[in-house]
Length: 109
Length: 523
Image 1 (cartoon, one colour):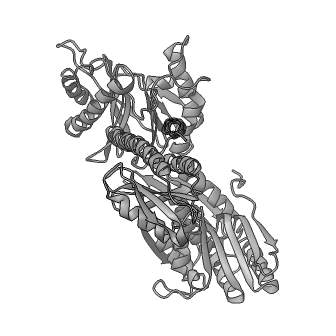
Image 2: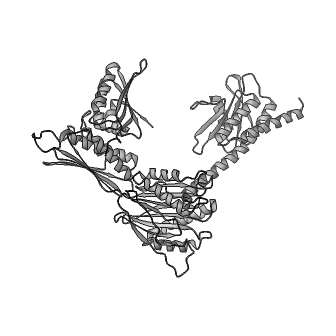
Image 3: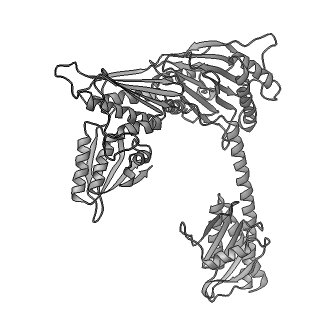
């Protein structure tokens, strides 16, 4: 049995235009093995821009460790979180965690 | 200009107007076209139509077009309101904004539609323009009335058609596809049904009435209702079909309908069936071996001689088995024996024995489609029996094994027919429990102690899924408790588990911790 059903994760930093937020776009599964990379990408974004967009619409799996990373980012920058309606982390989970109170949540279909 | 020439011009304009309206479909498109035509014919600056629905909400269209959310001017809105309840075929001249003139007329005389035309300032409304406006709006009113009748009739027809078809929302584990042969009908003579019965049993039916189109659909609706009723009372499928024989013999055109009727016993893992001249369903094991349920065969409905009796047989449903009921439209091909088509469907199903039932149904429908499309009605019903429980064990000192756990769980959830939203929720809850075990199972252990193992199990029952995540280490309570979430801590893991699952128990002991997660599935 191989673990190739779990997509390779990627974290891309996309610079915004003049006065636009920097975007961290995460793709694939986020778990214990790569949560550090996600957190580092968010920190890097917050270091260069006061507004950060975390695009997790292409994340196929993540858990509360990702929520923790987003909490830290929301304390460092004005954070917008883009989630997919059918994705693992939904608006409901973000509300339960309280993250929606310190970040803007946008659900995309 | 002579009166004759004027009348001739009016008639030509009306003919062009009528032709433009005839080319439109929906009412909103019709009104936009009418506004465009009237604006051109009368050299108006703005034409506005208003449509009030039964709850008095208003839809505005016009030429030039209104932007979404844009309102008509106050003068135009006032004019529309004034003429709305006036008798049909009346025209009113009103003052518009800043010296402009307005012509307005009701479109039906019952207050649900009206039209207003605005002219540039300084252009008085001539008698000819009034006459032309009256002719055009009278025609528009007639066409609109017909279109409304048609839309209403169509809505009634669709509601009735959907009512006689089986429910689209099926219990967990089932998937169905249905394509009628005669457009624009949305029903045909074929049907499928899923009937929850007491005692962890479910009735499943596939049937095919003689003929096509509306006459067959009308008979189908009666037989489908009747088969539901008889299955609720009959002790078994043979008796149910016998009752259906009696019923069908009293409905003209219902005789010779083919029906496969079965009762799935979820607890026993069996399917008991009886067949009235219907193609045999396919049963595929998780390993991809197939068999046809071709026992207990007898004649179609209402054809049995008095001394004949219907029989029934029982087949075992192994864990993870897939059962497919269908109608002959799926497998019937010109110049090819029915057996060949049935074998092709069975082989196609056997290749997909581990996929989610919805994907299986989509695959069967597309793989079996003839080059020229299906010629007859097609109904397909798929049932996935819960698979054997899943057990995966990984060492706790290698967190890359988390991906392996997830991959195995994903496959198993699909095979169990768990819907994608529920499957995602289960993945997160199980992932939280596993991540916690990985983080803490190895802490505080004496050097040289046996390595810690993490075991994930999952089992499916008809109405729920239960998972356990067990480790041989010691559970560390996450720092936050459930009622008082401290933002930004790992404590959200437990909160998420409770939010995503219907029951969560954490059982810490000296030898290790077991987290049990239960998710109820929709009935």
